[in-house]
Length: 135
Image (cartoon, rainbow, N blue to C red; front, side, top):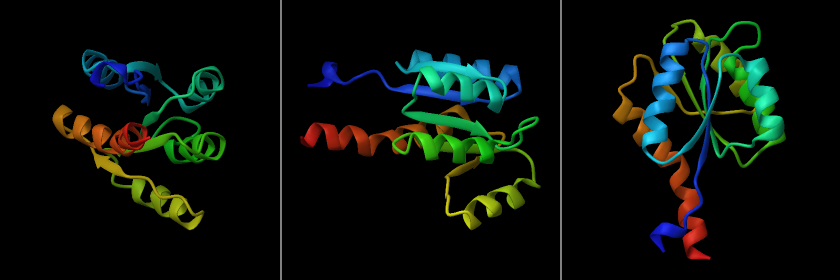
């Protein structure tokens, strides 16, 4: 039944307020419930009380980077999906470090077109929705 799907919750972790806020508006207009955190430390506070279905995380964040946050998120909430995005060429070393620790996350390169971001998000959330509809 199309109207009976739960509203999907997405956490955006991005230190550039203009990017985070724009993405939040785009996702909200698509029917997602969205929370924004401008730092990984704030995102940890958010997930303690609001568990997202998916987190869109910038790799390069001040203090704790997005990879470190994503590992904490997955360790505490394994069902939450993570989509990384980055415009920094040196993010590769951080991603390699995550792989070495047994974590693999999809990543989009900035700048990313909103349609590309939406397609990636829908793809990551689709398997959960298909499983629920088959039950």
